[in-house]
Image 1 (cartoon, rainbow, N blue to C red):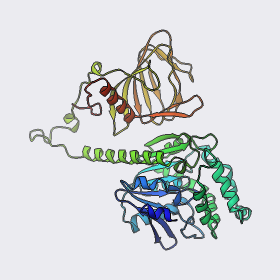
Image 2 (tube, rainbow, N blue to C red):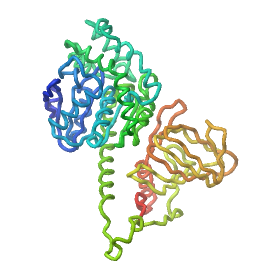
Image 3 (tube, rainbow, N blue to C red):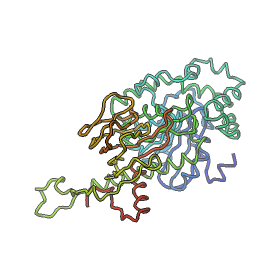
Image 4 (spheres, helix red, strand yellow):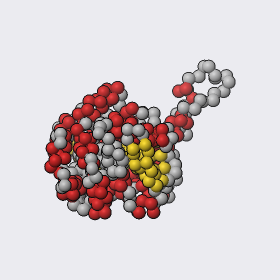
Length: 467
């Protein structure tokens, strides 16, 4: 356990009365609380925390009953566990608002925490975890070990003295490769899960699943979460949850971003920690900018005295005529050198981007999935989705619902041109369903700026709707 001390992390304990929580903390800046899964502890974040400490205060907690926290007889429903985290963050550490990063069981705890303290949770990042009670039949069914762990006393009797065998099986089977969790990490997890009462505490999380689902259904009916949520499911077949993780959170929240972590199984933060750090840094930085933009938009507009009391807000907004002809056509690199994009506008606040797309009559674009809605107006040519039997032509309007996936292909003998309004991430996929790339307003902006630089074009500010 010397490694975390060398990284500048401090081990602390918080006595909350009915439970004593162990946590590690370090760094300065906006706070992020890290919630682990089963059968892990705070230690699963060991290779993520140093990268996040550059800009943030990090707090990685051993949840109730697990790791080096105490093991009360009850209170393993996510609402109670979430209240433990709230008391730690708010009452002990004095954090009135904070971010959350969570994996596996930490995900449902994060949902309960955000649902009951909506103004305190600024944003969340969730890895390979659903929301119990989201309305999906897949969530209700769970996985094979959910039923086993849910049985009273049976799993404790079956694994007593064999914790090493059982947990190592879980670690080996849960990743994209058998050695996804390092040996030193497995030994650390076994150190805590072989302590008296630790396995029972872990099983108790599963025994409270139906209670969690019922409480979450009430919360969802009261209103979806509004804060931004980044969700990634593991891409390894039959191991990671893939896009199902996003689908679950989209049922419980309005602003869900993310996709699939390719090359990962269930243990994403331990399988690709550097990738996770990049996603977290970018996501939380983007959320911070969005918050600042919203605050700026709410500032009172100063009007000339003669207009006060007579002008409405919409009358003060600048309106811009966009000279589309002056904007360049860019190859849709690296996916195609015959398909071109003309980026018209990007909106960093809503994540929306607007572009013209031009493709040969016989072009086939990759299968794609998107988290938000997409609207397509056909200007010229004809096209369709391989998955549908209709054909869109000039004047056709196609509305793609959030969470859908399809493969666009050209039809006929004329070049296809469409106007596309895209909300959120646009995931390009292989025929087998693996995510090849994730496109969004930021990647589109980067493509535009790089193209302008390569061709000595003076870029215009396509992120603003006023001039």
